[in-house]
Length: 320
Image 1 (cartoon, rainbow, N blue to C red):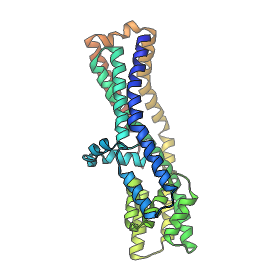
Image 2 (cartoon, rainbow, N blue to C red):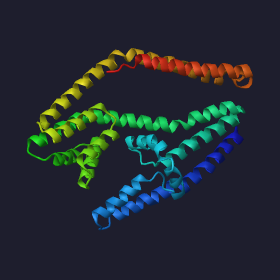
Image 3 (cartoon, rainbow, N blue to C red):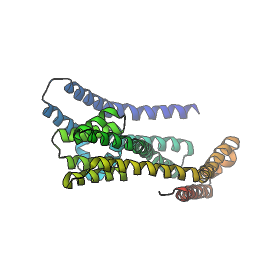
Image 4 (spheres, helix red, strand yellow):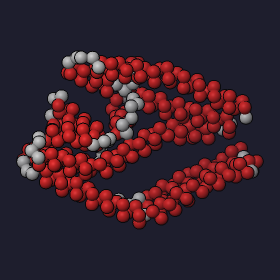
C-alpha cells in the first residue's frame, strides 16, 4: 500500500506543480497588475479598455491563449458557464483542471485495477467533475438570483415612482442589494455608463442570466423605452408574478419530496452495497475486476444504474 501512496503523491506533485507555475501564478500576476493599474490615477477610458481586453482572454499564458482563440466559438459554452457561475477561472485554466483531474484519476485507477478500460472510464468521468461543479455553482447562483430578483424589481419600481431616472434606479439596485443581483445590475449600469446602448446592455444581461423572468424584464424595459407606458407598474406586476411562481414551485417540491427521496435511496444503495462488499469480502468482489465476465457484468450494472437514476430523475422532475 505504501508504494501506491508514494506513486500517487509523485504523480499529484508532477501534475500540480506545473499547473501552479504556468497557469495559476501567471493569472495571479495578471490580476495583481490590473488591480495596481486601477489604483493609479489614469483616464477612465484607458482603464476600461484594459479591463475589457483582460476579460476577453481565455488564458493568462499568451501561447495557450493564442491556441484557444482559434476555436473560440466552440469554447463559448464553457466561457458562458464560467461567467454564469461567477468563477474567476479562465477557460484555459478550467480545461487544464479537467485534464489533470482525468489523468490523475486514470493513473490511480490503473495502478489499483491494472485494467486500462476501467481506468479510461474512470478518467473520463473524473474529467467531467469540474463541469459538474461549475454547473452546480451556476445553478445555485441562478436560483439565488431568482429569489432576489423580485426585490430588485420592487426597488427599481419605487425609484421610478420617486422620480429617479431608470439608470439611477439601476445604480440604486446595484448599491443596495447583495450578490448576485447587485453585481449583475452593476454590470448593466457600468456598460451603459461607458457608452454601450441600453438595449445592448439589457440583452447582454439576458444572456448572462438564463431566466425567463430576466427576459421578461428586458422585454418590458425595451418596449417601454420605445412605445412608452408606466414602467413602474409593469415591474410591480412582474415581481408579483415571480413571487406567485415561487409559491407554486415550493408546493411542487413538497408534493414530489417522497419521490425524490426514494430516487436518492434507490440510486445510492447499489454503489454503497458494492463498497461494503469490497471491504468485507474483497476476494469475492475482486472477480468483477479480474474476470472478463465480471468486467462485463460490472459495466452492465453501471449502465443500468445510470439509466435508472436518469429515469427516476425524469419522473420526479416536474416542470412548472
